Length: 509
Ligand code: ADP
Image (cartoon, rainbow, N blue to C red):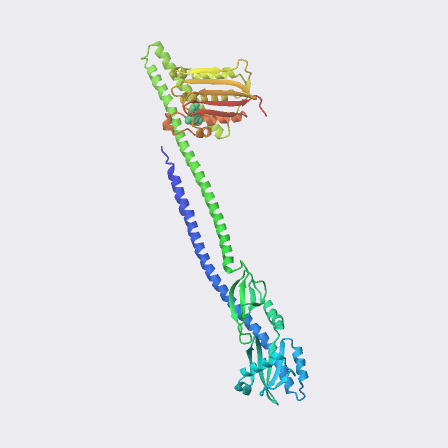
C-alpha cells in the first residue's frame, strides 16, 4: 500500500494559495486603490470646504465693518441735519467711535469744515480724495471706499440743508484688527488656521503661528479691504493627505498583522497536515511490516512442521535443527505479538508494571539465551560485562527483559559485516545502566531523536529488508520512563550504536 505523501500537502498548499493568499492580495490591491481615490476626493472636498469657509469669513468681516461704518455715518448724518449743528459735537462722535482714525467734512468747493485745522499730510489726502469724487457722485450722493496712499477711506456724500457735504472716514487699523478681525475670526472653529493677509502677503492677523503650515485656500475681500485676503492653512502634519497617510499606515499595519496571523495559521495547519500524513504513512508501513513479520515465522513453522509430519527426516542432527527452527521462530513470533500487544496497551494507557528487586545478571543471560541460535548462526561475537557483586535492582523483570530483547534484536538486525554484540550492566550516578552495543550500520545524527517515535523507522521499510514494526524503541522508551529512568543512544553511521537503559536504584514513590 502506497500513500503518496505529496498529494494532500500539494492540495493543501494550492488550497492555501487560492483560498487565502489570492483573496488577501486582491484585498490589498483594492484597499490600496480605494485609499488613493479616497485621498484624492477627500483632499478636493477639503479644499472646497476651505474655500467656502474663507469666503464666508470675508463676507462676515465685511458685514461687520459695513455695519459699524453705517452706524457712524447715520450718527453723523443725524448731527448734520440738526439746526444747532456744531463742529464740536462731530468731534464727540469721532471720539466715541474708536474704529474711526480721522474724520473730515468737506463741501463741494473743497472747504474743510472739520477738523478745524489740518495736519501737513492731511491736506494732501483730502485733495487726492476730492480728485476721486466725480461730479455725478456729488449729485447722486451715496458712499464708496477710496484708496488714498496706503489708507482706505470711506467717502460718503450726504445731502444737507447746506448742500452736499463729503464725509471722509479713515480707519484705525489697530481697532479694526482687534474689534472686527479678531472677534470674527476667533469664532471660526476647526483644525485649520485662519489668517488675514495684506497686499504683501504679510499676516495682519493669524489665529495660530503659520510656520510650517500649508496654505489651502484664499478668498479676497471686496472694496472695503482691497488687496487683502482671508487665507486658510493646515497646521504642520494635519493636512488631509497626512491624515489619510496616517490612516493608510494604520490600515497597512493592521492588514500586515492579519496576513501574519493567516500565514501563521496556514503554517500551523500545514505542519499538522504533514504530521498527520506522515503518521498515516507510518501506520500503513506498520501494518505492512507486522503482517510480513507474522507471516515469515508462521510459514517457516508450518513448512518445518509439515516436513516433520511427513516423517521423511530421519537424521538426528537435521531433526534437531528443525525443532530449533520451530522454537526460534515461535519465540520470534511471540516477541512480536508481545510488542504489538504491549504497545497497544501503552497507547490505551492500560500497561501496568510489577516492580520488584530483580537480579540483573540472570535477566541478561536469559535474554541472550533466547537469541543464542541466531547469534551463533550469524557468527556473532558476544561480550557481556556484568560486575560480579551487582545488587538486585527494582524493576518489572518482564518489561526490562522485553526491552533488552528489543535492543538485542535491533543490534542483530542492523549489524552488517562486523558481527559483534556487547551487553553491559553498571551502576552509575544512582542508576543501573544496561547497555546494548553493536558495530552495525549506525544511525544518522538527524534521526537519533526520531527513532523513539512510534512507527518510526530510518528510511523506508523497503530499504531495511522489510523486518521490524517501528514500535520496539517506542516501547523501550516507555518502559524506561515508567521506571522513572530514561534511554540514551550514541551512534555513528558505519561505526555502530550503543543504546543505554537507565533505571534508578531507588524508586521515588
Ligand atoms: P524496528 O521494528 O524497525 O526495529 P524500532 O523502534 O526497534 O523498530 O527501531 C526504529 C528504527 O531505529 C529502526 O527501524 C532502525 O532504523 C533504527 N535502529 C534501531 N536500533 C538500531 C541499531 N542498533 N542500529 C541501527 N539502527 C537502529
